[in-house]
Structure formats: structure tokens, C-alpha cells
Length: 433
Ligand SMILES: [Zn+2]
Image (cartoon, rainbow, N blue to C red; front, side, top):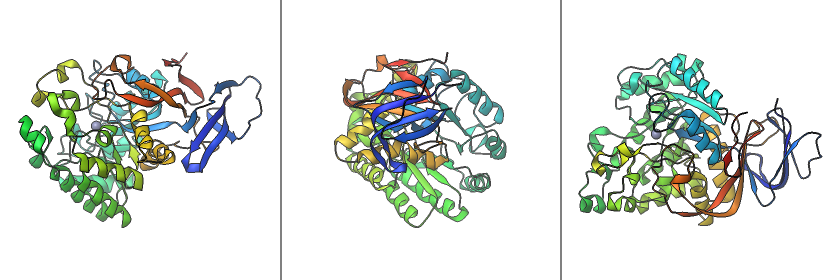
């Protein structure tokens, strides 16, 4: 049994419950018991001093690659969970592109079991849409749902076969599962490695046109609208995509979307010098796209900030740009990059918190995302004034592939609390004793 815990003297920002002010938070039995201006002392309770800090509902990341089973050299469920709580995340959704692929309840249960052993944060599991992520045959969606999968996705791969996707939408709707989509028409992206534009031409790299993403968003909104399924667009990167999603949501289509910190922070300028840490899929776009993503984060078109945490080692990244693996890690840098948007006046504090908490919770129907009585005792305490420099060597993740090395940022996680237990404090992981 976890003993009661009181977080004293911080500023609670809980957009879902419209709280933004000095409050104490009391946890009992792994749940929120009370949020009040001055909580009475409780015999035997642990105290977290949050003076000068923001006290947020635990952050939720809808999109991480934990690499276990199969690629434990890049990350394990344990090291991924360490990186998550160090970055302030109390819950993550693990993508199915492991080895073996999570297209069966056996793999789902394996990941759930390893996450319980790690005992650091909640790990929700995403199952595959198609067997082996091959896009040919549907996975056992009903079995994945009963094993506890919170969404289905072939993430990393688009579902090129629209007929298969339509059937998957119908199944997913029957099990109330969101369908998360990596949108890329492979006949348009072809062998492209960076966004189409003057830089791709100058650097002599094969381009990926925006239409590879935008056309698939259009197709899948049409199928979602017709079937009434819940569609979730992963890592949107283009102005055209957010325009379509905005219009569809206005008409009541059951769509949600996420954007990654790298897509709302960087342009393809980061590819200069052939930096493979700037290679990802979808690729970094240009300023007009970055602006559009930021607007969509502000106006509610995009529901969640998600990292697409994608660990890779030197064997995959210290090679020619054309041959390098796609992806960057993000769990330990997402929060300060989201706070940059607050510092720049793009987002209000409340909106930034929403995009990291209740927004993702709602998109996938996950518990938490707010601090109402009875909610899970998951909290992220942030020092909003702490200045620091991103140093991948200090990461808890097993991998180092970040394009943000050396960047000065403001805002640092001081405590992460999961299930009423402090799991990260003073820059250290507090392992499950
Ligand atoms: Zn991904």
C-alpha cells in the first residue's frame, strides 16, 4: 500500500477541471483525494514541496517506440519508462512495430507484463491493424481489444489498401478502439528521404512531396466519416493535412490528431550538413507547415503533443543520410519544447498543458489527464523557470538520436509521481523498491 502523499504549495494547472492557481494536492490509495487551497496534515503522509513549481496532471504520450521485444539494444521497456518519467510522462502508448510485431494478445500481454515489472509509469499498448504490419490481412482486432490494447495502428507503415482499412475501421468501431494512422502514400513518397523543396534539390536528396501525407489524410477522413470510426492521425506535418482535419472536425467527423515537438519546432534547415538526427518520417517540412501545425495546436485542430520517441543506435544513424533509419527520441525533451511555444506566445500555459494531458487522454479514452477527485494519482511537477541545456549523454533513454543536442531550454521536471509514488525526483529515477 502506498502511503498518503501531499504536494504542497505549487500552482496547480488542471485545464479539464478549470483550475489554475495555488493548491495542495492530496493522494490516497493511488487516487486523487483532494485538491484544495490548504490541505490539512495527514498522519504519516509523505510531503512534496512544490513551491515555485507547476503541478500538472501526469503527462501522457500517445506515441512511443519502446523497442522491446526485439530491439533491446536501442531501448527496453524499462529504459523507455525511465526516459518517460524523467521527461514528466506518467503514461505512454507503446507502438506495435516490435519483433515479434504486436499483432497478437501474446505480445500485448508480454509488453504489459514487462511494464508492470518496470513499475515506473503506465504503459498502454497499441495493437497492429494488419498481421505483421504488412497491410495484407487484418490482425485479430477483437482479441487485441480484449487483451487491453487501447488503439490499433500499423504505425511506421501506411495502410495502402483502402478496402482493408475500411474493414478495420468497422471492426475497431465495434470494439470502440481508435485507429491511429501514419499517413503516407508510398507511391508518392517513393524513395524520398526529406521534404520536397529547394533544400532537397540543393542537397541532392530524394524529395517527399506533401501530397504523400495530405492525400492519405483526405482518403481516410472520407472512410472514417462514412464508417463512423474513430480515426487518429499520427504526427501530422503539413499545412494541407491540418486544413483537412480542421474542416472535418467542424462537420463532426470523429477525428483526432497529434503533432510532434520536432515538427512544430524544426524545419528542413536541420537537415543541412546531412544530419541524420534530422531524418524522420514524415520528414521535417518548411516554415509555412511549422506555422500551420502551431496554429492547429492552438485552435484545437490538433488534440495532443506526442513524441514518436524512436530510439536508434549509431549503426542505424552514423551512416549516409539516404541509408539512415528514420526517427528521433523525444521523451526527455518534449516538455521544454512545448513550453517554448508558451514562451513564444503561440500557446497559453493552459493549452500547452491540455495538449500533454487531457487532450491525449480523451483521444484514446485513457484514464487520467486531470486531477479531479478519484483520478489516478499521476502528477508532473515542473520548475517553469529552470534553464538547462539539452545533453543527450545525460538521457535515461538507451539511445542518443536527438536533433536538439545543445539547445538551451526553460522548464524542467522536478518530480514525477505515478500511482501516488514518487518515481522521479532530483534528476534521479526512484526504482520500484
Ligand atoms: Zn512512430
